[in-house]
Length: 105
Image: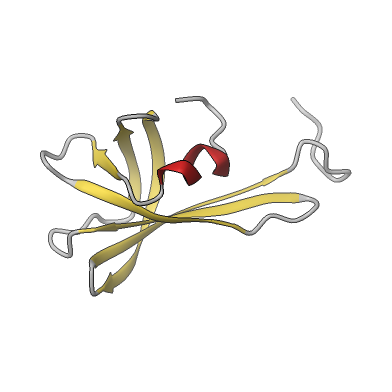
């Protein structure tokens, strides 16, 4: 998968499964991909659902998708609901064309 992940990479794959590397038969479903961007910031979140037990503690996980390949996401558990444990990966960065974006190093 490419280095700079974008919302558009994930939106076509809502309601599909990602396997968690290193855990046999452990899958997370991408339940939605939400855009919070504005003129200066590109912000979005990816929300996943998994089994209620065992659940994953907060941390960096390698997820693999049949179409996207492998990507590393920092997942935060948001608590259980009727379908299982919910997780979120949040992204926030200056837009490249933003007048306040920091200079490229």
